[in-house]
Length: 254
Ligand code: MLT
Image (cartoon, rainbow, N blue to C red; front, side, top):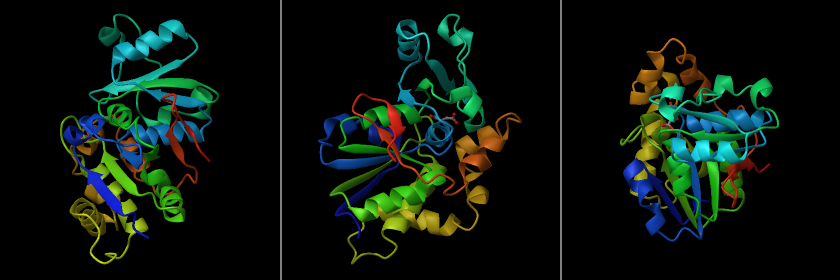
């Protein structure tokens, strides 16, 4: 059954004003396919205790000062945050899912700041529930939604810099396709229709489609990061749900 209100936010400008909305009866699913939300899912699959998304580098550094045991992770311009951006502290990890191995993250608390993904998550903190969206675990999210459709469902695409990101819209469309494959009597919103039609056109080969997106082109041009694109576009390799807890940390929910 289609949730009564299903909307897709495509751009960072839309999620930036979520704090003006009452989200107390809304479920948000945040997608930053390349790469933040895919990386968070990978970290949790590999045993990370929790990931605390923060918007700014300085916030991450402040947590590290009070909790020296935490791992710092994140990127700017796609690259791991270095000492030149922090006044001397090298971040432990960047934002590549391949870095978040069992050896690196098992049992750890990770403080993470990325250009778009962690900001989009922070924008959803007032939601009733906020889940981590990815192709890696899309089916699990769809199953959870169809088991008990929320009254308001908001698919939040994190975007790339200040623009929409094709791969995020594809994932939102993929979820729309799973939870409302039919038009459901014309009740599907225009934004959900747009995302779903994009996904339908691209679903046979997500890599071929997504590689034309801005962030995919940036990652594919970097020999050290190019493999991340295909890794983040794999479907349903994880069967668990992850979400934002009320204390602001992302944890496994199942
Ligand atoms: C972001 O949050 O903007 C992204 O995950 C960027 C990236 O590292 O590819």
